[in-house]
Structure formats: structure tokens, C-alpha cells
Length: 348
Ligand SMILES: [Fe+2]
Image (cartoon, rainbow, N blue to C red):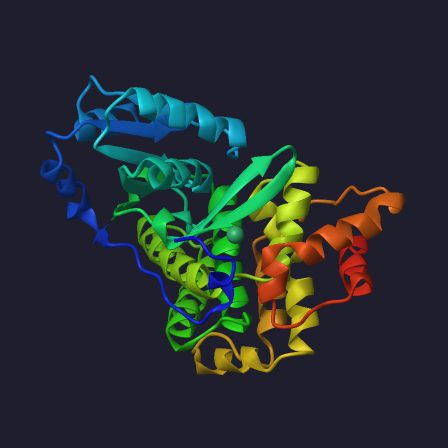
């Protein structure tokens, strides 16, 4: 199933199974005799050698994915899988690894298990795949991208730095906020989005306190799934369209690119939609002040936003590309090129 109309329909997509908590690794016993390939970044494998051996044994087939997925990476993994007869593809990593595996599992019809090792991408529960083709980030969508199994366990999160936790969580927060206001938002996606916003905001606010890192990571991992489910169903908006463009052009990680534009896009959209009123149902944020509250959170966490490089002669073309991004189409309000340019110029 593949249709251009699906992103705009009100709907909810769920993966088949999510195993949670300390016992979640036990699922692997159920597939211990199947032929499996682990797709993982090399550095993550090196940092988690003992954990991986305890889960999969010491003679295991690995395939390394070390960058945001390019179309060539997808082709390489696909060719490798075509030569071998795998029953399961096991993606261990953040959005980059998970997205490249989703593409292959759909094309070759191989079952997929995802072990998310980030707290923000939501890729493991998303019907979207982002692949870079010739320097341009392309978005593909299909419910068939969803993994059959997701294992949510905090063991792989221990190597995340504080900076990674902050930016990945801001990305997850943006999934909640953007899907809440999306043209395709609906009752189900709203419940998921609102809960994720509350959990992320509350936990980021206590990130500087000592002694509760494990509990914070557990909550952020759950919130990342909730906001991922919301965005997979309702889709994101202009902030993600801007981040897709400049993330690739300026070589900025996705989560850092999202952080640059989040509050500006909220400011712009707030003037044109009443969908953010739903935030009034939350305990920690109010629908009148939530943008200011998020700006204060950015200051409290000492978030430094990246600068955007774009030549003045290229800025109109950039705004045109951003307006064409699929995420701009689900934004609650259709911004003019001038409004997009104004946001870009604030960050040059
Ligand atoms: Fe994102």
C-alpha cells in the first residue's frame, strides 16, 4: 500500500507489538533459532559489546550503518539481504539505522525488530522514512514501514550524553507539538501528543537535578514513542520542513535543526490556529504561555542553537523547497514564502 493521500487523512497507525521494561529482552528467546542480521552503528556496537554478546551471543552477523541514511546505504543493505536468507532484521540504533532497515524490510518483506537507542526520533513507530538522495532529504510514507516488534529497554541509553538527551527530547517534543496542530490531527493522535508533551517538558525540567537519570531516561523513552506514534499518524509541520532542508544543506543533525526552528514556527502557527488550546488540558503547561515556557526551558538547559548558512541569492529557492516539503502541507497554516524567509533570517 502506498498512496500520496494517506498523510492527510485522519488515522492512527500502530506497530504490531511493543515489549517494555526490564524483561523486554526476553522476547529474543522466542526468535533464538531464526536467522538474524543486526544493523547498528559501529561505535554503538563497540560501546555495548558485552550487552550485545549477552543478547545475541558472540558470533553474530553485523551490518554497520554510521550516518544519516543515503540512498546508497539502503541499496547496499538491500543487496546484502538479497544474498542471504534472513528471517529477521534487527535494527539497533537511532532514526538513521531504523529508517534504512524499514525501507529494506518493506521491499524484501523481511520481519523487523527495532531496539531504539535514542529518546527522540520516534522512527521505530513511524510510517515515515527519511533518506538522503543527491543531497536532498526525501520523505517516504507507508504503514508497511512499521516494524513488527519494538523492544523498549533503557540499557542502550546509558551511553547517551546530556547534550544528546536534550536535543533528541526536543525533537520528540516537536513531534508532539507539531502533530497536535497538524491538519490530520485527531482524537487518538491528540491523546498521544499531549501525554508526550507533558512527560518531556516535566523530565527536561528536572534533567539538571542529580540522581534520577535512569528514571528520566525511562520516561523520555516512553514519551518518544508516544510522540512518534502521534507524528506517524498526524504528521509534523513547518518546523520539520525547515529542519529537513537545512539539516542536509548545513550538515546539522536532525534534532539540532529542529531545535533551531521550533519556537519560531510555534509563534507563527499560534496566530493562525486554535489547535494549541488543547494544551490547556495539561498540568505543567498552559495554552496561553506554552511557547514562553518552552523558551525558558531552552534557557534553563543552556541550549545553543546552530547558525544557518544560506546565501542571500539562494534564500527564495530554499523557502520554495521548504514550502513543498510534505510536512509543510500538514502544517495547520500555509505560510507565505516571506514568512518562511523571515524565520530563516533570524538564525543566520
Ligand atoms: Fe523529528
